Amino acid sequence: MNHRCACLVTLAWLFAPNAFAGCWQVVPEQSQLIFIAGQAGGTLQGRFNDYSGVVCADAANGTASRIEATVQMASVETELPELDEALYGRDFFDAERWPKAIFRGDAVRPVGEDRYQVTGTLQLRDVSREITVPVTLKPDADGSQASLATSLTLARLDYGIGQGEWSDTQWVGDEVTIELTARLVPAPDTAAHGTKH
Amino acid sequence: MLLRNTERRYGMVSQLLHWVVVALVAIQFALGITAHNLPFSPPKLGVLAWHKSFGFLILGLIVLRLGWRLYSPPPTLPATMPSWQQYAARLSHGLFYVLLLTMPLVGWASSSAANLTVSVFGWFQLPNLTAPDKELAKTLVSTHIVMSWILLANIVLHASAALWHHFVNKDDVLRRMLPLSHPTHGDHSR
Image 1 (cartoon, rainbow over the protein chains, first blue to last red):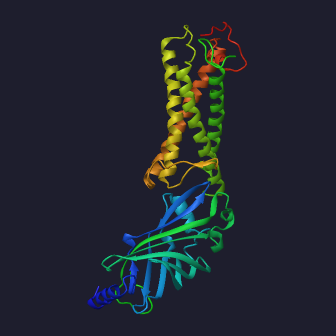
Image 2 (image 1 turned 180 degrees about the vertical axis):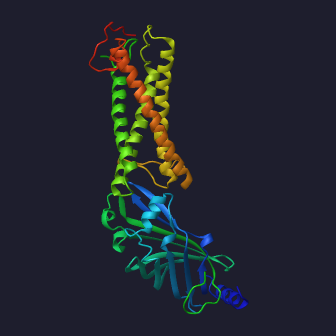
Image 3 (image 1 turned 90 degrees about the vertical axis):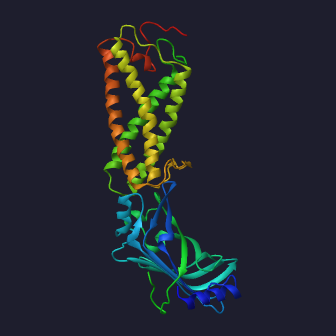
């Protein structure tokens, strides 16, 4: 982190203890992105290993100027190799054709201390839908890093996840919960487009 | 017929538990083999869901059977039976208890290691027995399958011995476990 960025962050903290300024990126090694689906009356849990996210906030008024998260769908991992194979394949993620899932946030509404409702577009497979997700974003006490947590529940069939025989929800439920628990660190100075990994 | 076992005959409770478990184990072999041969698909998940549910039921029934056996000991083996056969019978029966208790637990643990929770007939979910662990899941499934072969061998041994007692020895050993038959040498209640 360069001195200008550190200065900016410290200023923001001094003048607005709850404000969150500059661009921050997810550290995947210190984060966790999991999904939980219903199966046969119980649950099934898996994770994604390769993803990135960036949040940019305007120092002056604390509004977000950019929120974007990208998940490499081929990085899905459960404890069942045959399930991983199916998820990668045409009936589920079709990861060869649609390698990434992307969320772009358009609007942020504070709803409490460190809590926000973020509205944006989620693109999964070939479907884009507008969604609103609750996000908790808490800078550390010294302002140098932050933690982010969000959870969303979606209907997999809305995104075409589960084709053919898998569109039946008897044994694999329609509702899937996705949870991201992330550590955010200041991103190196980035241009308006593109994220650094 | 009495509820409890006598010196010469199994009572109603033992017989019911025995034959119900026989039926359930037959169902489990059918479900397990079917699931094993299906490609990864919704029907496979469905068959496995039934298999896990029946498996938990067997676990419960075997625990009941063990408890009942402590309360009402089984009939004594015929005095005419050579001691090596009596020893083999006790081993075989003991092996049934070990397998029918352990196999459901291994199966349950394999689901836990696969990060799948088990639901019993959709009524309630079982807690996880292990942490998620891909390699452990694979090992436990293999162990479960190997144990099923041992169980099958034990069943063949057990059924063959029962039929041998009945048709060759012409003694009461099989009759004692059959609901509608009467031992030829009379009942002596405890």
